[in-house]
Length: 131
Image: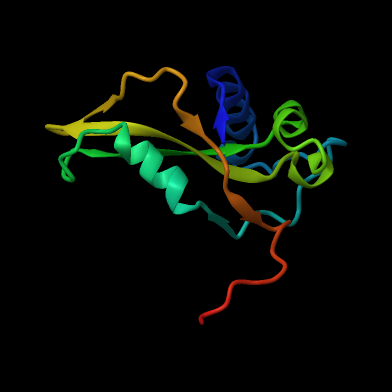
């Protein structure tokens, strides 16, 4: 699911203010988020869609991953039924990027931010299997 640059920036700002500084994330009520994310699953369609926008050279084209945190506003906008569970939850926002001569450059798309992962917790049931 695409998200706007503005929403990405608000998620990044919340993460920078809290978790990046070694503080606990805050939930919708301003309380410490005590059961944080263990893993995030992204489907192949999302990943391949981002890679399609990057350089075709597998040594150059890739995906830049940002660790962020859901704000109440972003959770409400994209996941209105899960605002309580998601506000303060860590997540990953991605966008296509290229690496050339140790210099990271972003692809032309200004709005190429993706955040459509299944995070655990709170969405762990059922747990993944090895089969």
